Image 1: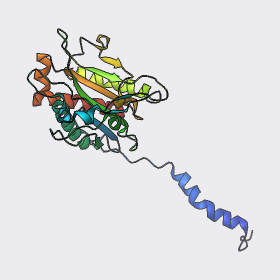
Image 2 (image 1 turned 90 degrees about the vertical axis):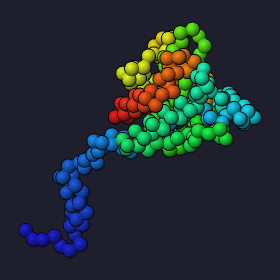
Image 3 (image 1 turned 30 degrees about the horizontal axis):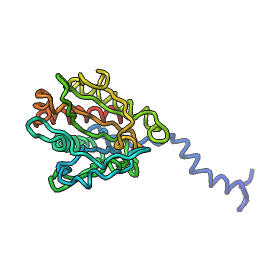
Image 4 (image 1 turned 180 degrees about the horizontal axis):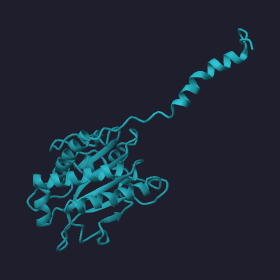
Length: 259
């Protein structure tokens, strides 16, 4: 048998296929391993610290109507506080900053909807908060708040998720509901009580009236971490130790959701 003549098509085809055949023989290329100490490497998480400390100083700005998912709502509100005057905005900010540190340490990229907690700042509006993370292709968004009920004995947390409502949140409903369940479980494991006064007593509340949730294209929930008007909840929510417990529980929920 002689060699193939120069320029023979069979020789050209064999040369072209050689790298492909070698790659197939070597088997599939393994995906890069995620470092054990950075389980959230490559993930993008949006943290929305509710309200802003200075909102009450800017009534015209926070009361203007903005899109909220098929209707309009005021840009933002002042939020609530404890009976002693500790603001919801400050509680949300402190938990958010503690949580940010934990998520970054775990390898995540963290996007904050506000960059300060200041008397001379307002907003952002709920439509901006709602869309935060959409352009970044974030993996999830958590909005952190405190409630302010005066109902007798009202205490505990609840987690709000958006409904199956086209064309706004039908695409994120299932994942958001799962995120709500995972968040609830992590908080219960962290020693927090489920709300006694709202959400049917199970700590999960489906709502379609919140622009922060309605305008999201990524799985999202809003945590009402406790009732700031309740003496027991307020003691936990205003203490560094309590804020650290919230941050640990939320970090656990995010890792569970994104694993």
